[in-house]
Each structure stands twice: as C-alpha cells, then as structure tokens.
Image (cartoon, rainbow, N blue to C red; front, side, top):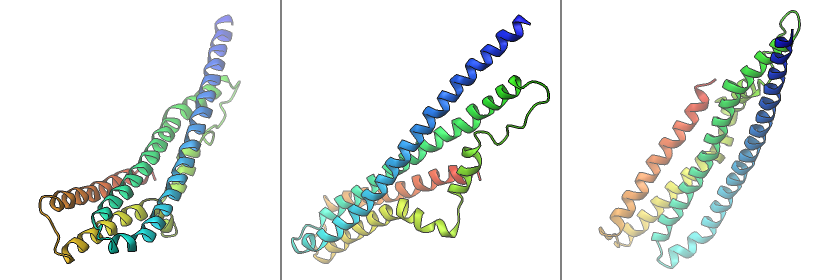
Length: 204
C-alpha cells in the first residue's frame, strides 16, 4: 500500500513537471509565431522600400545595389524558415514525448477502468496538421510567408543583371562573382523552403 502511494506521488510529481514543460513550450511556440508574423510584415515593408528606391537606383546608375537588395530578401526568408523550423521541433517534442507520457500517467492515476485521453494535448498532432495542410486557399498565405521574399530576391537580382548588361558595364571580376553568389542563394533558399515545408507535409 505504501509502495503504491509512493508510486502515485512520483507520477503526480512527473505530471506536474510535464505540464509545466508543456506550458513553457507552448509559450515559446507562441513567441516564435509572433516573430514569424513580424518577419512577414518586414517582408512587406522591404518590398515597399525596394519599390520606392528602385527608380532612384536606376537613375543614379547604382545597379549593384539591387544585388544587395536580393541578399536582404533571401536573408528575410531564412529568418522565417528558422522560426518555422523551431516551431516544428517544439511541436514534435510535445506530440511525440510530452503528450503520450501525460496520457500514460493520467491512466495510471485513474482508478478502475482506464479512461480515453487520446484527445488530450492533441493540438500538435491534429490542429497542427490542419493548419499546415496544403490547400489552394492557403497559397496566398504561403506566398506572403515564403514566396514573396524569394520572388523579391529573384526580381532584384534579375533587375541588377539586366541593368549592368544593358549598360554594357558587366565586369567579369566583380559582377561574375556577384551573379554566381546571388544565383546560389536563390537555389539554396528555394531548396531550404521546400525542405522545411516537407517536414510539415510529411506529418499530414
């Protein structure tokens, strides 16, 4: 009897720790999502600034600044992907470690017939899938989150390339490495975006 009570106390203590861990991770996820939303706003602001500054850069013969703008857009996309990847890791820990253990503890603490706790702490498994499910109506959201900075970077790079070629000022020593670098960033950013999105789609 005493051993059973000690076991129940240990389970209750672990349940309390797991619950606090869950709350901490959910708060961290909310903070990361808020940061991701701010990054989306930053993307929109960057597009506005780029559009406003574009005529001045063209008239002032500063075509290489468009290459810098492209790098800025790609960097914004990487920041967004970092937040999304962190959210995925935290959600995966909740759904694969914390939630199953909490359900087991609650069943052990429940007297008599085991209860059904399958829906408890189930948001990461069910709601998360609905949130990240690939649907046509989500395309505008995905475009704002990932497509907009990638497209902004690509257009900025192509604008830079068109201007230097049109003006016959393409310097192989300077513009060659810049072109190669920007092209590599575009390919890498596209691949990274696809890889991160595949993490979510694989769980649907």
